[in-house]
Every structure is written in C-alpha cells, then in structure tokens.
Length: 527
Image (cartoon, rainbow, N blue to C red):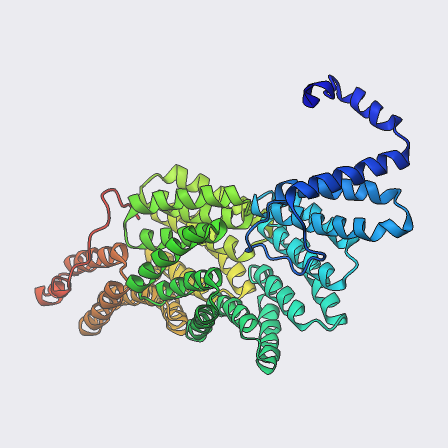
C-alpha cells in the first residue's frame, strides 16, 4: 500500500474538512506526534537557541523548520500544563531556525515575518534582542531604512534595560549601517565612538573590530579618509588574529574603497580581487555583490569599460538574487556610469532614473545625491547645461545635508566648470578654488587633479603662463598617480587647444608632451 496515494486528497477543501473533523485535543496530539517523528528523523536539537548568526553554517533541520514550528505551535494550543514546556522550546527553536533559513535562501520578507514571530514567542530577553537585531538588519537590506532604524532602536533599548553590552553594541553597529545613508550619520558616529570606548574597557576585541569597521565607513563617507584607514586596518588585524574570515573580507573591501578614493588605485584593485576571491570561497553573496560593485567603479575610472560593464552586471544580478534593494540602487548607479562611458547615453539616463527611484524608495539620501551628481555630469557633457545645473544644485543640497564632503567638492568643481563654459571667469576661479580646498581636505587626489588642471587653464587664459604651466604639471601628475586616463587625456587636449587659441609659445604648449602617458581607455570610451 502506498501511503502517498491512499492519503492523497483530490481537493484542498476536502483535506481541510477532514482536518476540522478531528477534535482539538486529537489534532494537537497528531501535531505533537508529527513533530516527534520528524525530529527523530532529523536528529536531536539543542535545548535552547544560543544566538542568531546568519553567517554560521545551516543545519539539516533548516529546510523543514517552518513546518516543525507550525506543528509545535498547533500541539501547544491544547497541550496539558505538564507537557507545554518541551513544545514551547521546540516552537522557539524551529522558529529561529526557519528565520535563519529564510535569510540563507534570501527570502528576506519571509525572514522579517519569522523574526517578528520569534520576538513574540521567545521568553529569554537576550533572544528577543537578537531577533530584533536580525529583523532590523533584514529590513535594512530590503531598503526599509526608517522601519529598520525603529526596530534597531528598540533592540538597543531592550539590551540597555537588561544590561547586555554585547547585544547593545551589536544593535548599534546595525543601526549605524542604516543611519550612515541618511541625515543621521553624525548621530551614528557619536554612538559608535562611545561604544568603542566601552568595549576597550571590557577587552572585547571582536566587537571593537566590528565597531571600527563601521566607524571607518562613516569617517570615509564624510571625507575623513586619514582617520578611516586605521579603523579598517585595526578591524582586519583583529579578524585575522581571531580567524574571522568573513569579517576580514568585509573590512578588506572597505579598505580597498578608501585606497581608491585617496589615489592608490593599484593597491585598491589588488585588494578588491583578493576580497572577491575570499567572498566567493565563503559563499557570502551579498558581500560578493558589494565588492563587485566597487571593483566595477575602479575599472570604470581606469577606462576599462568592457570589463567594468561585465562586472557591474554581475554585481546587479547578485544584489537582486540576495534581495538587497539598497545595494541594487547603488549598483544601478555604477552601471549607468559605465553606459555613459560607452556613449549609450539614453540607456545611461534611464539607468540613473532607476537608481534614483530605488534610492528614494529606500531613503538612501547619500546615494541619491551621488546619482544626481553623476547624471548631471552626463547632461553637462552632452550640452544640456540648464538641466545639469539644476541637478547639480539639488545634489549639492543633499551632500551638505548628509555630510558627504567628498561629493560636495565634486559638485563644486562641476558648477565651476559650468561657470567657465558660460564665460564667467571670476565665478569659475572661485568655484574651482573652493573645490580644490575640499578635495585636499578629504584626500580626493583624482578630483584635486581635475580642479587644479581647470584652474591652470583659467590662469593660462588670464596671461599667467608660468603659474599655469606649473599647476598643469602638478595636475597631470596627480591624475597619473590616481590612474585616471579619461581626465588626464581631457586636460591634455584642453591644454593644447587653449595654447593654440591663445598663440602661446611652443615651450609652454609642449609641457604636456613631457608628461608620461597613461594607458588609453577602451575603444568607445566616451566620458
């Protein structure tokens, strides 16, 4: 006799009717029996849930955990008093495993529901805090930043009330990750600085490293790269010391991003590729997607557009696979810039629009400002200058609001370039000088080279040939150091053309021919 055939119902209504005919006590007993039999097949489970670690290996029970939690819940409804505790323990355990499994399989919305259920059934305050932290983290991945912040603040407060420093810090690290994309970035920085001081007193180096990694990102995003670098290097050293491979990989990605921003591109690319191999080996797909997106930006700046396009498409596919809506918006912005470089302007604009929709949907103000800046730069290049200026001004307001000093300098430089295009020499000079001061403050050597080169062109037009020649020489050196062939080529051409227009002596014009060449961008590189 085949039980699968004998007990097969031909219609769901018949099945439900047969189920409802069972008296409540009998139904509860059957659920308890089903739980017992399936558990026997899967093996014993620990008595309690000690932690919720989404990076830990899965367990054999995980694919069946949601079903087992349902059996435990239904059995518990009619269980006698002396049999309730084992069923409640099973309900808590399997709800926790089901939530983690939903995270492993990137069913983010299901994970949110299951973590919320876990909060309601967990008797242990520590487990409730852990469930709140994971729910907040997943909401952040989904791009629900305001809701995520509220959940994580609840976790932080409950941990504080129950005197759990480790959990309070864990909540603060996740909260800072959410807040750094918003107007509350400064608040996040203050919170993490205080947390680090407390962890140093307790000697908890693992959590201190986690705090430093996130603190480094806040410092980097606000233009303080020299302060951010030791944070990342400390986090990497501790992760290596403690054998925390995934933590080390994430910090390596952040360090590479910093090195790229301060004009050390060769080191940055080497570390990106090292981190990418580690992420793939460990199977951490969200981290892999983040690294691919950053590597794509590095390749774009180097003019290697074909490879950059492929890498950004891989990053986008990974972000969508893991359900990271905020990350998807960031990668769309990077992909749009590659399309711009390929002179596929209509596609680039459409992709910038998609990125902006995601940033606004998720409340990611920092990335919204960056996408507006890049889209405006594209419009500037194709001579839609009024639209470009409008977007630059919107972007500038956002950069100042969220404290993105680096991007503020980029926009100041672009607005100065617009003034130069309109023949407003004094306004352009003033704007480039403001931009240059910001670029030097934050260590943005590539943009420093661009601003300095444009100042050189203005000085040349004003008759200061010697001053202009010295400034252009320095500017081209900065761009070579930063592996910025597009900007190097553009400034070189502008210098030669301006010298020809002004009838400048050949010795001044020949300045650029004395500069070592950079590798040329890929064919079709348009920006």
